[in-house]
Image 1 (tube, each protein chain N blue to C red):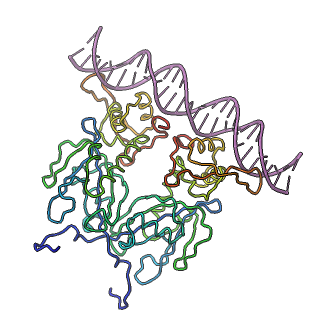
Image 2 (cartoon, rainbow over the protein chains, first blue to last red; image 1 turned 180 degrees about the vertical axis):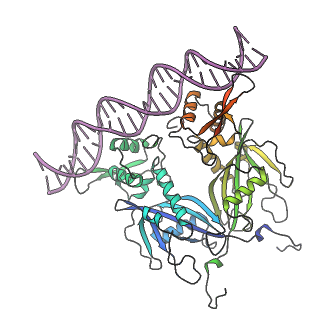
Image 3 (cartoon, rainbow over the protein chains, first blue to last red; image 1 turned 45 degrees about the vertical axis):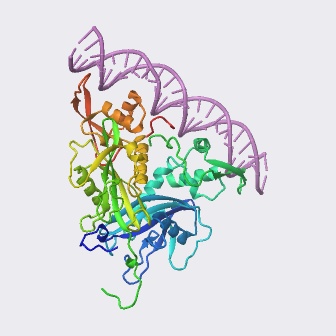
Length: 239
Length: 239
DNA sequence: GAAATAGTGTCTCTCAGACAGTATCTC
DNA sequence: GAGATACTGTCTGAGAGACACTATTTC
């Protein structure tokens, strides 16, 4: 469908680069950790050998949508297929990537501690404690993105069931409370915690689980794995 | 910088289209309204003559960043330079634009009722009550985006000072309460409302304002126009 | 003074946190 | 039974909503 007149078409604009990055959190050894990958050192690669968030270009032939692209990248790096995956935001400007005006669509994901470190030989990856990762000088503007992800996570943990996605099912309430405490960085009252979790009615019993010592505990499963539950109030009013 | 070897460079990927759309809210005549623009009818234009959110392609030569691009589009359509502008999210897939795989970075903005409808002759615009706009069949996936914006706004109004950005300064507490009620679609208790607003300490007195009838009221200004204030709790616990 | 609007005081109920007590498991 | 962990009950204090009351303005 060629146009005989000389017309400036909107699609003739020079197009920015389009990428997707995923901030993947888990809890290992009572620490909140994030997955980083090492940038390749090939010719013309930006930020060679720097640590970065997993991500890359949208492939218009393979990816039906941005979300599908994020899912693909998550699957490639962790093997996890049905995680909690939420959009974090987008960043784009002329200078974040030396190859040109570029945009990234950042997602953030919560997964249970991966069984085996799915050692995809092509990339070097590392599960780094969040605070350490935030202090490293990452590639691109990934410090900004990671910072936003941590902030969003910490904030949402105050009033949502998000931490449940960091645990393998079934999990017990004490285990869940521990995860909340790890992410928030402060202890919570057991009684108040249990009241909130059970009143919210987002858990379903899944039989008793016996630990190493002490009394056995009830195991729970999420009632809906697609959306987190929002609690009516925050922990520690006002704080 | 040509490379003698035949190397597939990442930047050789086919690039999606990159656009920015802005959902601009205001309150007029005790109604929450959103700005829509009519799509042009030129040759090859998608969704000719349909209503759409204001937006368009990122111009890599003019726009330093996505935010700057959104600010430009807002300024062009409303003349407002320093509004409340927040990123809403991004959408992108192979089918939302007939011209090809496209992405949009959506922002949402709150502005006081514009003085004069800045009738930029080049585009037809309309301030449409939100609910009506949401029922129209808009161009692209703009119904989805508008829906997300309304949901985000309504949700944030429950626990933030966002509605203050919908009013010209100085405003009185009764005026502010009216805006809250308009956006939330339900009445609020005067006493509780005032306590919340004043306790949050985000307003600064700006002299008495006398209305048409009745007692004069204290006028207020926002202490910080950059970030909204988050209240410790929501209106109507739990609801 | 009446009408209209702005602003305050008080009561009550709910709910989250504190914390102590009870239950059940392993050794 | 001791130690460890899971779970529950009760008290208390803070805070939001309901609602009635007071204050200040115009006519």
